[in-house]
Length: 620
Image (cartoon, rainbow, N blue to C red; front, side, top):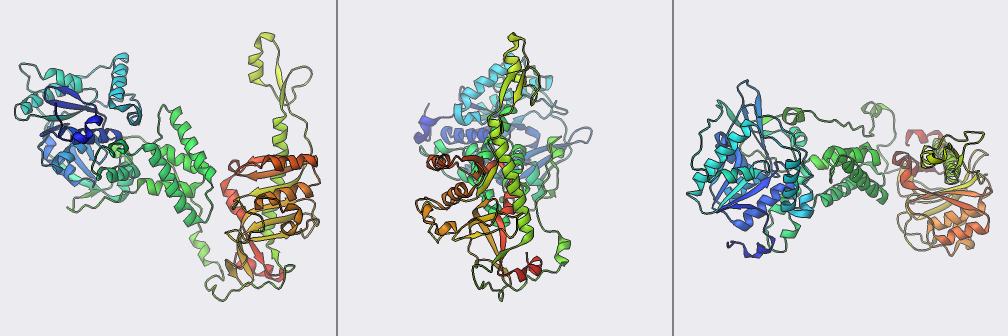
């Protein structure tokens, strides 16, 4: 057999051949399946295409395929006047075949028997993403084994449809030399085996008095597409590229990479609209979450609902909304032929569904009536007369001190849990029964209980690093976090603080009121003891500003523990430095803390005098 596209002969897609009929077994509404049909068409170059779609609706099906990538909906009604929907979208294999044929002026035929009340059969199919890794042939062989093992039984409607399609294929084979046949996996081999029958019984189509072609509104398209918009758009982009020997390996686009790119694009919008940071551990947590979520549902790749749950749980509702907005957007909805637009819900087409709600943080419309002197900032200036005149905003001090107390308790708790051990029960249940150890030593007939380790002391300093900027010395005054200073607590309930942040004059929000963003800070207890760590020569060998804060926290801590919150643990040299002074660094990954709380803490305001505290509430 010779092919019209020699460049792709080494990448011939899997087909089941019966004479001059090439059959591609498919599952509808899936990007990987649509790509297999597209590649089969590019390689085989048929002179006729036959698809498993209702023959009575051929004109409407062809019209819908010609409108792609615009979305179409073919609507008809059964004997009970219940609506029947056929959705035409780029990632459906049957409509991909019709579209490819129409683009190349090749005759296309819908050859399926139109039946009423076809049963809703749900098969437990392998995740089609496996085709990306193992190919369609191995996927189909796995499906056949599953079908045999499960004892799949066909209905009388299935048998009638297979006989009708076999008859139509035989008729087409008399007129065309090379036929590309697109059929569901459950029927393809039965149909091909029936083609050799000497005669076929005639089955009448169900009567359809009304067959309409419509399109969807924007809101409905976001909701009802089988492949959400992000997948379809990227498939469409790849599809427009002519397949050759180099590009065939990258077609279709890898679904896993598309999801990764979706999170990256959503994170850019999230940072732009909220001003919150999106550290790298968010991306790691998201990908790990959706992997595990998909696996517990026996899938390789997550669906849109699982992606949105991950976005909401790993970051916040604002990020989940941006992810949903990007994922479901579909720019190819044009409706240039002015078809009627329908506003259908997911339940109308697909039945029962799961719902997810977003509660993005935003200002209430009623709060706009409150008096805020923010309209004209051009005249606002920030000219502190000296380093000893600036001060903080007390409500923010209260929040950050409370969070510092929380981290002190968290650090001590982590060490206690690390020292936890299981011991045989004797006189006390200690901290509860250890079920795992009890079962493991069941043969000993002993009950094991948990015993927490003794606390090694209290926490004397807390360090939080939001962004470990650069790899240069702390003396660097350039970059995003170029302002480095030290604050002393005003009373016994406040800690001393040293930090690096955005410049004090960069974002002036009111007269003598500046808005800054922490890159990192250190809190030390008790107050009124801290020198300016940024000019201290003892820390000249530190590689980053974060290391300056951590070494200062070790030096000034009066308790043996230092809680260190950052994206990465400290260097071993810093840990050795702490051991020299009988101190211990308790590392907490920043990803374990609430991103909503961290975003609140990261923003603070600086006043050029205590007299500004009276009016600061009108600008902050």
